Image (tube, rainbow, N blue to C red; front, side, top):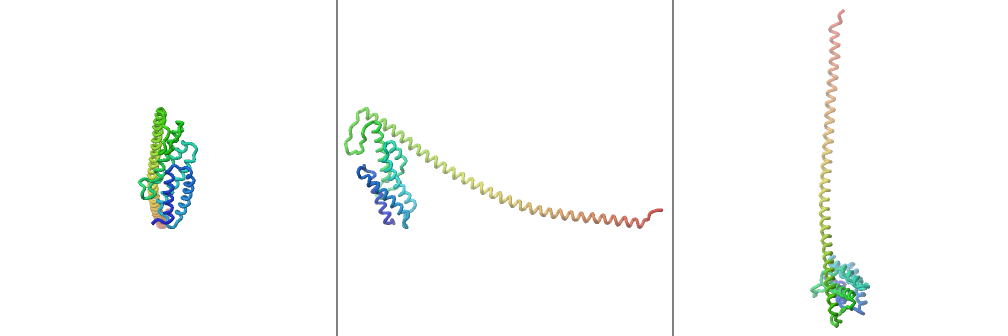
Amino acid sequence: MASRLEINFIRLLSRCESMASEKRGETEWRLEKYVAALEEMLVALKKSQSKPTQEVLAEYTRKVGFLKGLLEAEKLPSPTEKALANQFLTPGRTPTIANERMPASKTVHMQSKARCTGEMRAELLGTSYCSNPSKPCRSLPVDERQSAAELDAILQHHHNLQEKLAEDMINLARNLKNNTLAAQNIIKQDNQTLTQSMRQADMNFEKLRNESERLEQHTKKSVNWLLWLMLILVSFTFISMILFIRIFPRLR
């Protein structure tokens, strides 16, 4: 069950997203104050004992960061800079309240992109941008409307290129991650094989040392028997010579 702090946070977040979707004039300072209050409540919510899950906190952080980035983008001087800043904004992925079909932050993001595109087109054509559809705007001549259509096509083409580039970058990052994981698995397997080889080498070295000691002992035994045999043979020869001399004296 959501805590009182989380309920107040969700209410204020929904109110901020609703204000961001509207054309703001004098009330813009209120939205900035509300977003600053959201940041403080988010910090308190992360420190709360009854805080939500990490996934929910990450979604709250994403939505608050989106609103803050949206306000900073609107303060930029030129429509081009605003449009570029909007490209790097990341709206929320889930609805804030239950009756939202689409996340409100995504709707605000699309409205902001459309507003920046209109301001860029108006700047290039030297006309005023009509941001309020309920109010009548000055109709453009045929040549200007044709130029506006061509410009819309160019902007749409660049937008498609940017989306394709972003998708390619995401795929590249995903492939890089998969390759990194595969390399880590290969390195891990190589380390295991190397460890087993070192263990087997240690066992073989221990066996070789034992066999060397046994061979050395066997060699020592063989040398001892050979030495005793030589001593016995020399002694027998010496005694035989003595006996021969005694039995057969020298002829005169």
